[in-house]
Length: 376
Image 1 (cartoon, one colour):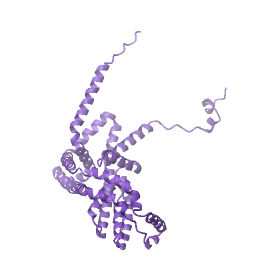
Image 2: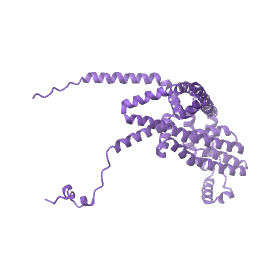
Image 3: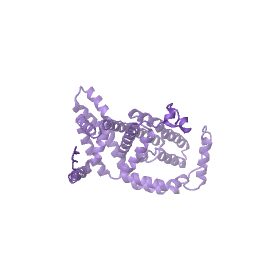
Image 4: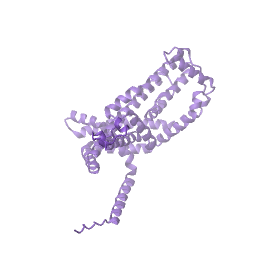
């Protein structure tokens, strides 16, 4: 019987098709490049707020256009205008902020007041560390932190100084968000069909997980940053610290970068101490500690409402995405890590884990002997 002839493979045709498809994809991305930040922002916002839009639509008797207009107004006043105010404030005062950071080594840290020793449990330790920094001379802690603060502030201001580009991205974001709010089901159906064609059930699971991760970050990271910055700004304003608005804007950026609001508030505490406002400084210091510790309670609670993933995975994705892609990386980073982690875990779990070696195996018995057959 003659074997079946081997089917020839047109390798040149396959390579040509791959090259053409890759060229089309690269050209499409290059054309869309100016719109990609706004598109990513709009998709992130719409995915995170889609349940809110559906609730408004039900309240309005199913009229989608009313719900869409309401969400765009909320988007404008809750996200776009506050972000613009933060970024424009930082950009406007960037020179003064950098000059203040470079002057930090000239400032002296005063000796700890007596009431610090009386703080339960941690008072003596705080007083000892404070006294060590005060004895170090002019600058103390601030002098040690100055090189790191200079680099961090320069990075933050570099990302915040492009106000014009930000406004363009925000305009694109509002327009695309309006389209997605109106045609959200069509977009979701296309994405689900694409990933189902690409990876079957795994693709559908990845789409669902990506949406959950976006909501988790929006709840856990952004809401926590806004709450901490708002509470910190209120404390600075009540205490009478100058430039409280600038410090609040800086706190927003630091909280989004997962660095916390403590350093700007500590600067306010030092200024109050140096101006003999010791009671206000003491109260602000306690308030700063409470606000800085708030994220340990609020952030895990909110993240778990969005997706049941490791908090460490989410935080690593937030920090890595922030440094890799800028502000929008806050959402891209956790989504990439969450989807990758879940797909990798599903692939590993397809094969059962190897069983542990029994004591018989350690004694050198063969599989036949362990099954009950006599040795040969």
